[in-house]
Length: 95
Image (tube, rainbow, N blue to C red; front, side):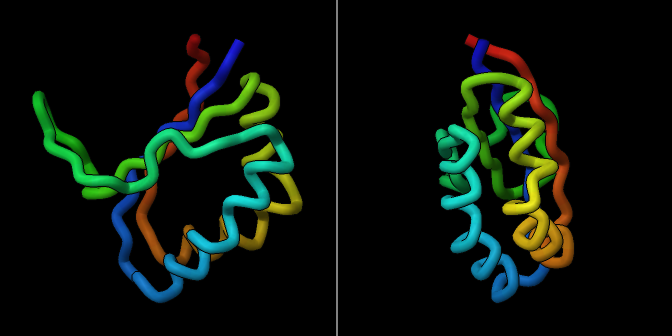
């Protein structure tokens, strides 16, 4: 069953975040992941949304999504993101 990582991102250091953004695609491909949403325009329709940027990634399975997040390939980029943005992130099984 497919799995989706959903991130709410508030960028605090745009320059470092740009470096992170450039490094992520090859790490995703190695784990079967792909971008579905990558920070496009958004409008809150109900409730509150914590961050101005939303990212949605799709993986073939929950295991592959978690493996990507914990992978050595993503370790460096993840550290960049953590230093350049405040992020909420979940992984959810889906269709």
